[in-house]
Length: 248
Image (cartoon, rainbow, N blue to C red; front, side):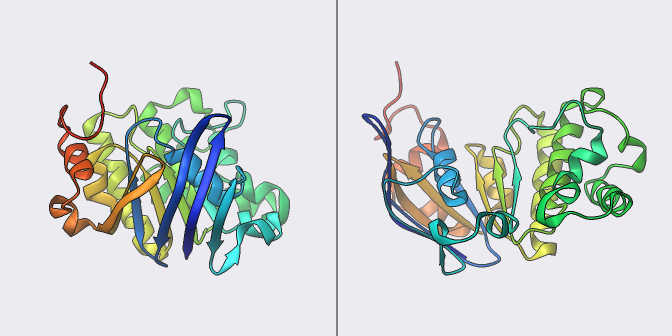
């Protein structure tokens, strides 16, 4: 579904991506791991066309992302943002149905509300929260609302940016289970970026490690602990010593 070939991206002297290659099979859940500041978010933004690579090619379903109509292209994606990114002035149901209330996916308002309530139900929330404002919800509830929004338009491809950041271990487990279930049910292709190894093991079919602007290793989750790559080994076990430099 997604293929990145020799993708480079720099911001001035800061070379973030240095020939990144990544293939994400259709219907698979790919988790990209790597330290903070290694370019994981830039990787996703390049796929979405929000950031233009300096060189290399990115294809989604065989189409060059720089040559497709933007509205139709972006309609294929759902996104769970790291901080939730809910609109604080809109009630929950309008946050969930945001894409169904405008643009090429627009539905009648009553229909959009019904769909939003159904998606809230799918993430374990009742219709009583539909008319609340995000500020009235806990962090875990806000994350679930964000997940409902990500799936509301039935996207083919879903991106999850640090989905468990700021959550306690129990709620993180709930979110991980929901992501796994929903991606499987929808048959969607998913990319998750995270440094939470519990999430990796709960969500991933495939794992890729980004370091030094390149994908150092990729393989099925079952092979992660026997990757044979010293960078991967140090990262997944959280060792302070190894080829990945740490601040002392």
